[in-house]
Image (cartoon, rainbow, N blue to C red; front, side, top):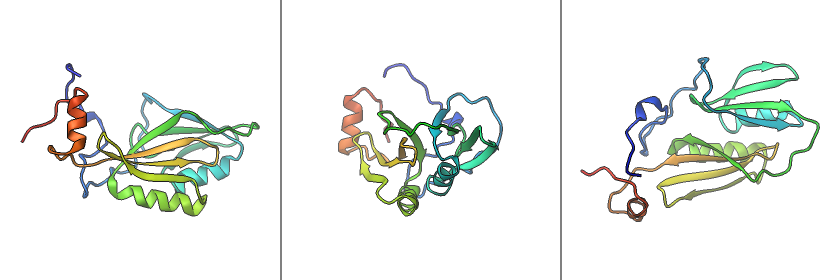
Length: 168
């Protein structure tokens, strides 16, 4: 990664840290640069899980056709009804969160669907990740950045893979 520039000003993700505060849920309307469509045989159950477990809101619903869910800006999901029971996805969907949210998301999801979470676990790229399998078998990874210790194994891993780390 030799050619990059800082663009954190367009991201809703706060700087990492144990006291990082999540941004408010974003209720504005924008041209979505990315979204995921998740088919579900039970739209009401899926909306319930995504809102109560993963912290999304129902931005709007067209009854029987689509429910548009959102958390932070650029974290959009479209739930659409299907008659086909979904298989476990081989693709995962990743969403940023902050460290203080990881355990509360795990607890909320487990209360709704026992056994649906794996983790959290720390990664070599300096995050904490929680895997959640939703009622429609989507694999969701909730990822929170950790503060970077420049003397850590994670910092050495990132530098060995071409990342320039801040000094000082």
